[in-house]
Length: 107
Image 1: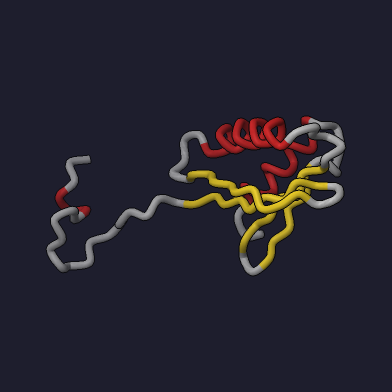
Image 2 (image 1 turned 90 degrees about the vertical axis):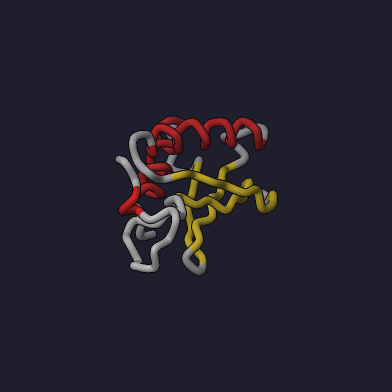
């Protein structure tokens, strides 16, 4: 994973559960998939609440957003696709005179 936020997310969830097996992050084709161990989470909602809380703590004060999508339930884990994404916003002037040009912003 190139984004260190995934590693921090994994470390914090595993530390909270006192186990290295609570959450595993596996990248496939540039997309992170989270494998939440069912032994540590009796329901999907339990994991999703914890995931959302920890991800929000990691992105406070940054431009990043966190999204996740439930994919499937396997024998031993809940599988999610997860992304830390930056907002789709222009950060430079392209010279085309766009009405929302960054040169026209007041801040």
